[in-house]
Length: 330
Ligand code: ATP
Ligand code: LTN
Image (cartoon, rainbow, N blue to C red; front, side, top):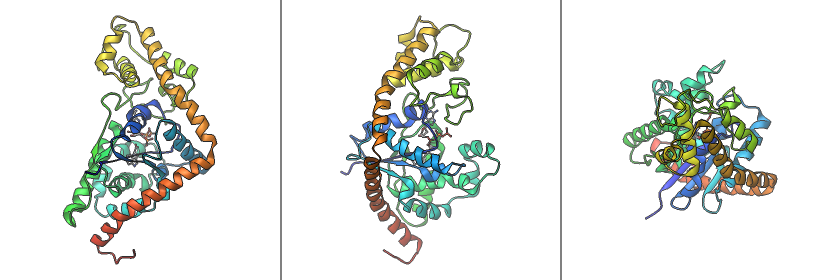
């Protein structure tokens, strides 16, 4: 039997945090052994909020180098840039004719992001439709993403079902694959909020490329509470978040992390959390800086990825065009 297809994407919209790492990126590499994986850099999604062109270009290549530094292997997976495969936008348009504006208006990520914009652009509302197209084009069964993307995956299933029942069986219905620990890493400063790279307070997040001293400093300033006892409880969201981060980096359960810290104080917790993060990220940072310098190698990888992705995407799109009633061009 053919291997199942795994699909995920990350926006090149700035430096990635350990939230992105734990929730998504750190899970990508091992999936390559078991599945046929496609990993995309979703630049079309990034422009749904304002971007500086030169920065977007830089961030796109940074993210490609980071993918590779985290173990993504172009021999095993298809690694490519979304804007290089126009089929995403073509299918996206068709899917836009199969989804209600009301449903898009109810997406929580849309509501959050729209609030922060002076003018809400149509692309932001349609963002999840393009995401559905990304996934459905490749008949993906599994989508490794953080918990915040669950609603988008459900919408993708809805759209696919609608298309399948309106025309005929066409798309595979995908499932979310969220990690057991760390599917929602919280801000170090406001542990009721998701850790986000667009947070105004840089102490709220740790970047994958932060140096060791910065990591130690940010963790030592992380907000905890006045209880003084380490418990894994919603009443101690700061401590709980640190335990989750530790568990994710040590690849143990939250319960095991709790046992490890039983009887220790907050200072010890913070110190070990920081060292655990540093131990995992420093070799990635080293590889990143090396890979990032070789522009030609990066170019060869994204060109080859786009070709392979396009070939698969065209197969689905050809079917879709026929079912919709377009006169064939292929
Ligand atoms: P922003 O926070 O800047 O709005 P984002 O980081 O959510 O954007 P992406 O860069 O596209 O957007 O996210 C990439 C992946 O990281 C997604 O799978 C998302 O679910 C995951 N992710 C983002 N933040 C967290 C978090 N705090 N905890 C766990 N996973 C996260
Ligand atoms: N919306 C996603 C990024 C994304 C994505 C995808 C993830 C765009 N297209 C397809 C998985 C599959 C986010 O993480 N913010």
